[in-house]
Structures are given as C-alpha cells and as structure tokens.
Image 1: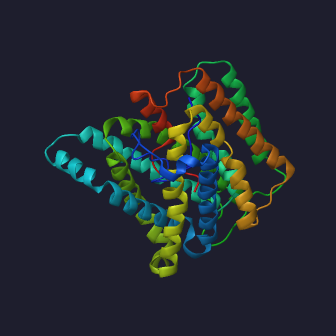
Image 2: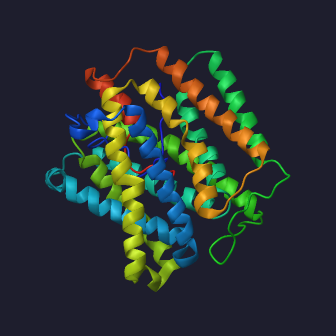
Image 3: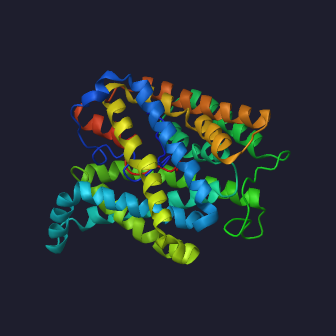
Length: 357
C-alpha cells in the first residue's frame, strides 16, 4: 500500500486524476525521455508553488475565495475534458439507473471540497510546510490501516513524534493573520490552523477511499467530472460570502487559473506519466518529499521561516510516510499494470485535486 497523496495533497481536482480514478493510460510522448523521479519532483514543485501563490492571494480574496477559484477552474477544465462521459451518466440517471453510483460521486465531491477548504484555511494561519506535514497524516493513516504488520506501529509513532515536535510551544507558528484569518471557537490562530490541518488530513484519508470507490463505479473521467462539479458548487457559498466582488476582477480570475493549472492540470499529467512507469511503492516514497518542498516554497514565496526543531519534525514525518509506503508496498505484489488491481493502486494516489494546494 502506497502512501497516497495532495493533492491535492490535494492536490487537487484534475491532479492525481489519471484520466479518472482507476483510468487506463497509454503513451507518454516526449515525457518518456524524462526520468520518472524528475517528473514526480516537478509535479510536487508545481503543486506547492501553486499553494504558495494561493497564500499570496489570501489578502485579496481570503482562503475561501481562493478555494472557490481553484475548484471552479478545476471543474471547468475537468468538464471540458470529460463532458461526453458526463452526458451519458446524466442520461442513465434520468432513466433511473446509477443513483447509488451518483451518491458515491457526490460524496467524493463533498469530501474534495472540504479537503481543499480546510487546507487553505490552515495555510492562512500556519506555515505552508507545517500545514502540509500535518495533512500527510491522512494518507499515512490509510497506508498503515490497510496493513497488519507490527512495523507499521513504528511509523505511526515516528509520525506522532514529528507532529508533537511541530506543534508544541516555542516558536509561534502563525504566519499570516488579518481580516481573513485568526482563531475560531475560542482557539488561538495557531491552534485553529492545526485543527484545519487535521481536518484536511481526515478529508484526505476519506478522499483516497472514495477515489477508489468512484474509480470502480465509473469509466474514464466521468466520476471525477461529477465530483469536481459538486465540489465547486459546495464551496461557492463560503467563497462568495468572503470575497464578494473581488472574485470578478480580471487579475484575480487569471491568478485563479494559474493556481488551478499549477495545482491540478500540470502535476496531474506529470504524476500520471510517472505512475505509468514505476511501482506504486516507489512513487509513494518520492511523494513523501512534499512536506519538505512545501516548507521551502513557504520560505521562498511567503517568507515563512522554520526553526531546527520544526525541520526535524518534518523530517520525521517524511521518514514515517516513506517507510510506510516502502514496506507496505513490499508486502503486496506490485499492482502497476495488472488489471483491476493496477487500477486500484492508481486510484489510491489519484482522484482529483489534492489537498496540498
């Protein structure tokens, strides 16, 4: 079992979609000449760079507004690419068929919306690298939960130690405070950011499971199209309430498109090609670098500095995720390219936008 990802992270809406959860792919064209490790690294950098740009927009439209922009663009792009399949599904539903399948896709979309909303709320209150590290507890929990090995308890303990180091007192974690961020429900800004990070981790775990279920029930990208439309609709209320007329500014719309491309479309293509060429376990190990890349992007784009203790904490979580991915994958046959099993392995790491921005 690989440690699934963001992203989308969140990665996320077209990101990790694989032509639709569980979809089959052919030929990579010019990308065949690029080592898969570089494809994965480029995808990670794109996702986290998109998250950094999103963080810089919080002062304009707030985290909810950025969430809406990203998901609206992702829904438009996904529908444009998979609209034909969506028409067939609509016809089936009108004829009274596939309602249970639709319920799964709708649930997938709602979780996707909650995941993106939560991680951007976390970004607005604590450093990017810290939020992404906490969020990675979601896929780690899924990877460990699917295993029965005693060694996995060590990975859990290692990750737990990293999170304790990351969130305990000392250096204030809050990176941006203002009209669109702050403490909620009596919690401090830092505690609220951590809580949203944990919520995103929980949503990511649910997202992985629903991605697989959606991939089994829908062919191609049709299930993803439904989920993305649902997610975009679900965040419309909070997005408009927070950003209001600012969402109509051409510059804001253009920035939202750039964030959608960096966080979804480009890394989706890169990771898709990498998944076609390497085992899922190796892919999961490479993806474990995402928290460190997020911390570096936070430093470069947002001026978020971390102390040695926090870098150590991030390292512990990375090692835990990589270990769970490596040894979990070794316990099962390599699923890549083996019929439906290969599709399930891809669905673990694919779906829609990942969380991490």
